[in-house]
Amino acid sequence: MKALFITFEGIEGSGKTTQAKKAEDYLKKLGYPVLRTYEPGATRVGEYIRRILLEKNDDPNSLHPIVELLLFSADRTQHLQEVVLPALEQGTTVICDRYIDSTTAYQGGGRGIDFELVNQIHKIATLCIYPTRTYLLDLPVEVGLQRISRRGNILDRLETENIEFHQRIRDCFLRIANQYPQRVMIVDAMKSEEEIALIIQNDIRDLCQKH
Ligand code: T5A
Image (tube, rainbow, N blue to C red; front, side, top):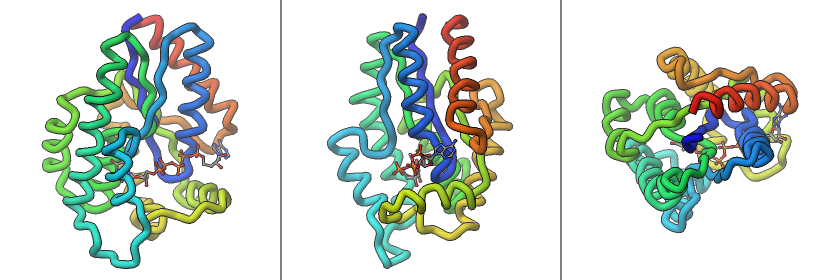
């Protein structure tokens, strides 16, 4: 099988990390080499960038939206070159928690940056490397935010944005899924963890047979 590049997308608290881990376990059980990673912050440079992006700051103007877009994209280029591409070239399937659709949804949909500009930056940052399959875990914004607040961690700069911001992001994710139905599969994230994992495993099994 050719190595797959699988991404998980969704709003805050949609269960991406939970399902990315389950997909990793499943692929390993099938005997495939697999690497699970995430954005932003999975490289040394990325760790610095992540801190700038997510550190809670009381000054709403501390990071201009374009700077935010460029920093997420810079993290992505470093991550692709250092982690994702070497793994794919070795035949290792890569599972990535967030990728370009997060930038389109958060910086395009959420912050209102022109989508043409966001797409131009994607081309530069990703060398036009797109996922084989994207699982969009979809659920109401209120439920996602409740789940993360129940974890009890301090909320970061983006998590503490208002509900309208998160709603624009959810709407944008759904538009992306409608635009790229071959790549993006919408999964109802209100189902139980086990039900969701089963839906994803069935799809992964099909993908493995096709590739
Ligand atoms: N961002 C990122 C951008 O703005 N632009 C970009 O280009 C990129 C790449 C990253 C932030 O950066 C933004 C988006 C984010 O704001 P992060 O710290 O890396 O932030 O975290 P997130 O990716 O947002 O992930 P979270 O940890 O907040 O949420 P997950 O991974 O979606 O959810 P998960 O799996 O941790 O689950 C959350 C809670 O829900 C429970 C879990 O047990 C957990 O407690 N849960 C369920 N409960 C009920 N039913 C289910 N089916 C459940 N599944 C999980």
